[in-house]
Amino acid sequence: MKDNLKKHLEFNEAVEELDSLIELGFFGEDARKLVEDRGNYDNVDYFIRVLTEWHEDKNQVNKHKSYEYISIIFNLYTQAVKENPEESVKLISNFKLGPEDNTAMEFTTAYTEYARVFSDTKLLAKEVNADPQNLAKRLRYTKSISVAYMNGIEYISKTLNLLICLEKIVKKEQYDFYNINKMTLHNKILLFNSENKYDILLEMIDRELRNAEAHATINYVDKTKSYKIKHREDGLIKEKNIPFTVLFEKLILVGNYVQSIEYAGQLLYIGLIDRDKFIQMYMKLFTNQ
Image (cartoon, rainbow, N blue to C red; front, side, top):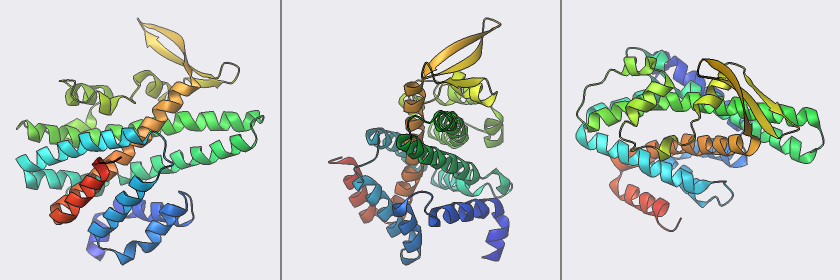
């Protein structure tokens, strides 16, 4: 156990931080209770409980998108596992833990950072709703939305490392994980979605918005309820207004995507370990939504 902790130090530190935030109630009472009870379940039953509670929660926004994304991602997972089980399962596991030869390339840390920022945004939303005339709170909230969106897109970019490799396995093509990791988000999208199979899965990605936040060229204008961004067009720097509602809707889609990567992985794990429980869980998720 100690060797495993040392080998996957970054992963374990990220998980400990996330658990600490959950136990403090940072992500709500349901999440806190799940972590508190985790020791009472094996992995399969724990994932079943996580998926069941999510499925039965009727208060989540835009939930139909999460089902759609889960289906797309899970289908890719299963195709890749069918083609090359050992390599595919190793890739999916390494996404969380980091490769054996470079455990610092784990992406749980990026997930934890996104989750923290996204939850901050939800807390700020409550403050604004409680005091809607407070300009300072509105500006903090709107800035938090743009930061959360950028962090979410950065995490999605990292998930594409995995999805591109799995797509390559399905197509029986060679790939280099490290070279894919070095690619820009734009080039990853071109490679992954060359046949336009994944338009829906990538619908939340707006290159101009992401670049504007990354380069501090986005500002919220309260008078117009929109974000003013600067972007390069035909060699010139131009301004563009993005309504608050547009960015907010994209942020919700980011949340749907991040959920779906997690839940598709949990569903795959159940399927690999316990076929009967997988069938029950799959039918529960994808019938009578």
